[in-house]
Amino acid sequence: MLEDLARQLKKGSTPTLLLSLLKERPMYGYQMGAELSRRSGGRLTASEGSLYPTLHQLEAQGLIEGFWQTPAGGRARRYYRLTPRGRTATRTASADLRRFASTLLTLVPEASR
Amino acid sequence: MRWPFRGSSIADYMALFSQCLEVPADEVQGVAAEVRTHLDEATEAITGPRKDAEVQATLTLGSARDLAARIGAARRHRRPVRVLVIDPPVQYLKYEVPGDPIRVHRRDLTWGLALPVLALVAYWTEVALGRNPPRFAIAWAIAAVILVAGHWVLPRLTPTETARALLGAMGVVLACAAVTGTLFLARIVQGDPILWVAPLGYSAVLAAAMCYRLLTPKSPLVIGPRRLIDHPNAPE
Image 1 (cartoon, rainbow over the protein chains, first blue to last red):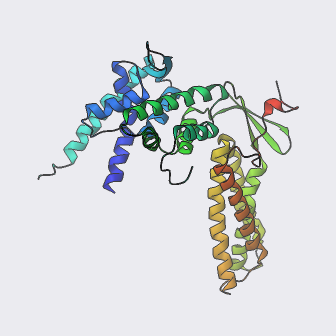
Image 2: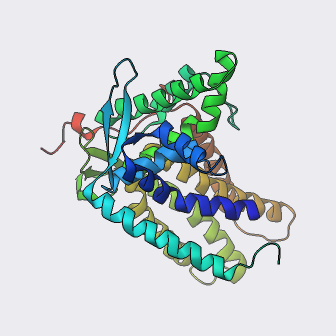
Image 3: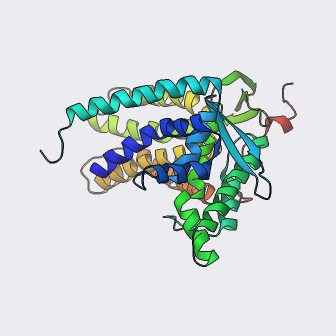
């Protein structure tokens, strides 16, 4: 039950987390997964199975766009970047997520109490 | 690839992924290349023998069939631009999808869903109300709801989703027919046995066919949807 709740919370926030990452710079799928894990100290790992469907969904919604790039001496990768519409959506989604999280925190008492 | 998914070599994974990927034709290669790059990169990041690393990398992405279905669902245009009926048994829908503009929906699929329900409902109407009320009229009313819903839903599904939907529906019909049959054989309820025997056999055969279709999407025995673009009656 609790695992399911945590999974649902994570699943619901994945698009916002990915958009927030792309706000900084264009990234490719594997990089985004690794970056999320690194920044959260390994506590948050985007399920790789849901990473690509989410990215493609965001692309279909016109919030991000993919493009292929081959760095010198590297392999070709599909990078994603925010579209102008995506930038607006990211601001709104981030604000919504913050508000939602702070509301939840006021409702849920600390574990030690 | 077996279920539950326990990882595989990248070659096997990509072969199945490409087979199951239902996105516009001009996007298949790009999506497959993206997943392939991810797997190569993930494999290199894992220490140990290459073979084990590949299994581990594919395992973190999950089943190729599921990933293909989820990416396909995310990329597909679901709203038909217009509906054309150009050949009595088949309804063609035109989608705004570059490279794969036409999707075919067979109208008789919805009949395939509605008929076993019609038989089972008729059986139970007879059991509950006897032979006096028009049992088939009530069953037809329920079947009509399924027909209308099916005509709306099925054209919006890919062949894989259609197979899954039919498999699920046949699972329900099979269970209902089996319960009805058990009650009939135990002489708890009595009705016309053809009304549960026919749905039972029909749903078992159709469910088996859908299982086969899902497990071997490229088998020559699987009759895929006709491409309108190759059809002599194709508009435009």
